Structures are given as structure tokens and as C-alpha cells.
Length: 216
Image 1 (tube, one colour):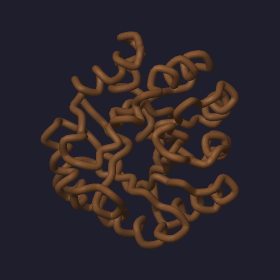
Image 2: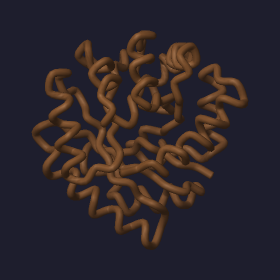
Image 3: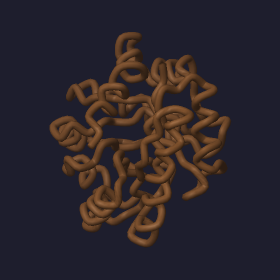
Image 4: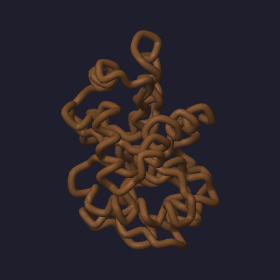
């Protein structure tokens, strides 16, 4: 059982076309995959329709969820891009959080955490308790990432999420085929971040399934 809610295809900076990405996830025993290519105001109108088209792959492979990762969008413009992506058919809205690995503008985590239209805050770096509480209050999932360098703050993220009872999921943030994670590897990422066995099981095998049941 495995659902990955954060991956990339050639429609942004991933290496694979959607069909190969989905097929490789299928081979790793995934039940569903969200393709969440990077968007901002310049490309949201072209990327989302292409990924909506990719949902047809699910007829032959596994369930394919069209999404976006809203990336390096100034906080004041976040709401506009989120709603534009949703209007174009994005079923899963990820916001690229304030990972210390990239120069993400301050205020991004808070803008995402306070918008109930956002589904997932990805690699949120040194997220504050206030930001985490806002995410929890709005039902926004928090990512524990398998992505190199973004995962440097996984332990901090787990501790803050635990403190406010925010729900966590483990994603690959795959850009290349070797980045995809089967269930065993996802569990290692969760346990390595300091989760208990119970927390890891929830983040890997329960919470993602609950999340996609609620998709619009």
C-alpha cells in the first residue's frame, strides 16, 4: 500500500513523462500518485490542463491525481495562484514550503498554512509552532520528505507537528525514477525523522488514503 502525494514530471523539472512516472509507481506497488509539477503565475494555465489529461492514465494503471506545487510565489500572490490552479482542475494543491535548501521568501509557510484551499505544505523547513497550528486548524497535511537536502529538517518538522497534532504524510518529491519510494523506504524516512512506529504507519499507510477520499 502506497500513495505518493508529491511528484514531478517533465511538465516542470522532472525527468519522466507522466505515463512513465505513473507506470514506475505502479511497479513499486503504489495505489495512487499525485503529479504536482511546479507552477507560478507564468505557467499555471498550461501545466494544470496537461496534468488533468494525465488522469486518463488511471484507467489502465493506478489512480492518477492532477496537482501542482506552487513554488516561490510571493505570499501576497499565493491565494490567486491557488485558486487559479483549482479552477483549472488541480485536485491536489501543494505549496513549496520554506526549506532551508532554497531561498524561499519568508511568509510562505504562513500563507499556505492559513489557506484552507491548500492540501499539503511541502518540506516546510524550520516551521514555527504558530504556522503548524494554522495548518492543523485548516486540515492541511505536513510533509516529511524523502528528498535529499529538503529532508535536513524532517526531525524538527515531526517535533512541531507532534506538538500541535498536525497530520503528516511521507512523500518522495520525486524528480527522477530512482527518487520514488516503496512502502519500506517511506517507513525508513519516517522512522529516521524520529517518528514512532505508530506515527510512521499513520503517515505512510493511513493518512494519505484518508486524504484522497476527500478530493474535490
